[in-house]
Length: 536
Image 1 (cartoon, rainbow, N blue to C red):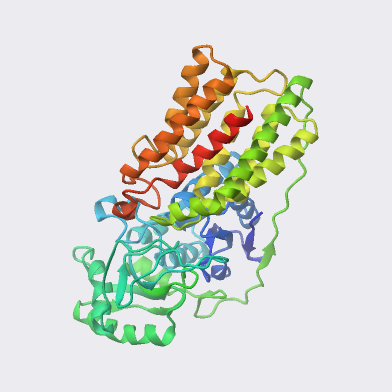
Image 2 (image 1 turned 90 degrees about the vertical axis):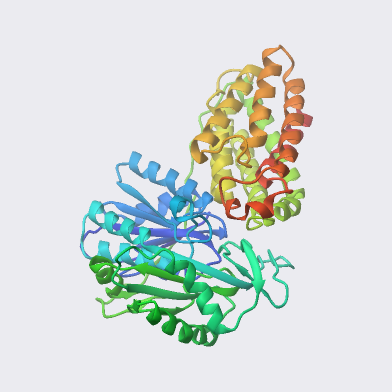
C-alpha cells in the first residue's frame, strides 16, 4: 500500500498541512515535508492518486488536534480520493479541509477556474498554507489564506518532448523535431497545441503573456515567481530563460519577490518548463517569504528541524464474520468472477493504456490491472475465511481502491462497496439483488464524480449496462441472460464514446485530441461485463 512521510516534531500543536498526489513529480510532494511547508506528504504510484486509505492514514499521523488541510493538484483522481479521505476523517472527529490547487491557465478559462489543473503552482500555494499554519493560525484563518493564494496563482507550461513511464519503451507523447507543445499537464498529458521552436527570448514571452492576461485590476505588481523545470530541462537552460524573463517582468511593471528557478514539480523525464506567478498582497508576501527548511525548499532560518520519518502503511487484520452456507457459496462465486476479471484486465492492460494516452497519462490500464488483481486476491482470502457475499465484495472494493489509486481506483472501489449493500451475508444471491446492486454502484460513481451520460466517462457505458440489466431481470429473464444483454449494451455504448468530447476529468483540456477515440474508462467496463457474463 502507498505511504508517505511526516515531520517528527515535539513543537506546539498547530494546523497540519498534508500534501500529496502521484509519484513521478519529485521533489513534489515528499520533498516539501519539514518546517515552514508541509507536515506530511502522501504518494501514490506514478501519476496515480494515492488511495483514500493512504491519505487518511497519513493525515491521522500528522494531525494533532487542530485540524488538517489536505492539499493536492486539481486532478480527477486526487479530487475523488482526497475528498473521500476528508469525509472519513471528519467522521472520526478530525476537522479536514480540502485545498485543490488550480493554477494551469491552459486547462480552462478564468470563468471556469475551478476546472483548472494543478501544476507547478502547487509549490507556491502549499508554501503559503504551510507558513500560515506555522504561524499558529487556526484552521479557518489558515484555510482562508491558502484559498486566497490559490485564487491568485497562475501557471503555463511548454514541452519539447514527452515523458516515459517506468518499464515502457516509448514516451506518452512525442513532439516533432523543431516543434514544441504548449499547455501540457504534469501527468504526461500532451499539450493543447504545438508550434515551431522559438529562441529563448521569444520563449520567455510565450510563457509570460498568458499569465499577464490575468493580472488583477489595480494590482501593485509584486509577484512570487517560480520558473520550474519538468525533469529533463536543467538549471543552465532555465537560467538563460530567466535572464530574458527578468526584463519582460520589469517591462510589465512586475517586481519578483524572492523568485525561484529550478525543479520543483517535475514529470519524470519530460523535457520542458513552466512559469508560475502569485499576485501578492501583503499577507501572501509575508507567508511566501517566511522561513522554511525542507529537503527541496529552503529559505531563511528556522528552528532545527527533526528528521522526517517514513511511514509504512500496514494492512490491519480484519475480522471476518462467517456467512451462511448459501452466502459463503455466493462469496466464492464472486471471488472466482473477480479472478477472471483480473485476468482479462491484465491481458487488456496495454490496450487500455494506449487509449488513455490519447488524451490522458496512459496509466488507466496499469491501474485497472493492479486494482482488479488486488480485489481478486482480497476476495479469495475472504472467501476462504468463510465470508458471505456482501463481505467478500466489500473487502474486494477496498483492496481495488487502495491498490489502483487514481480515478479508476476510487470509482471502482466505491462501486463494489455500494454494490455489496444490496447483497447479504445470510441470504442467497438473487437476480433482483444483483440488479439493485448495479443501480447502487452507478449512484455511487455519479455521486462521487458528478459524471452524466455524454461526458465521455465510464458512466456512458455503465448507464446502459444497468438499465438493460434491470429490464432483463424485471422481465423475468435468468441472471446470465440479462447480464449478457447488459454487457452487449455496455460494449456498444463504450465504442460510441469515440464520437464524444470529454467534459470532465483529465482529458477535458485535450478534448479535440480525444475526438475519434473511445474513453478508456468506458472501454474497460466492456471486458469486465463480458467476462462476468461468460462465467455466469
